[in-house]
Length: 128
Image 1 (spheres, one colour):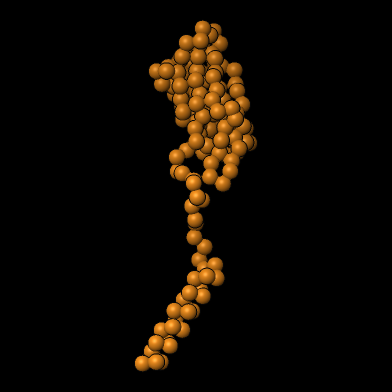
Image 2 (image 1 turned 90 degrees about the vertical axis):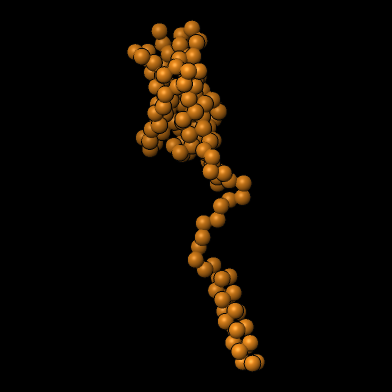
């Protein structure tokens, strides 16, 4: 009986030892990180300052060329531009019918969980 218990203890000890040596690396979620994407609020206005529904907004990362294109809602706002573009400068522009906006640059910086835009929101005004 002593041998059986000793054998069990030895096996348990080896198992614990292998579990503490780094073993198979596993992804560990960072404390406080969420899966919800950080977004940039983009509002498109006409020359008089009224919101433009159904305007097309393009956001292009200047280094990677990755682009997100979205359409504004009835309030002239889209929240589709998000942190998936990654760290760096993203250039925004809008089109409403035949009218275009000037471009605006947003700088995204990232930590261990998310990327954040600076500024946190942008207004794009269409030219008459």
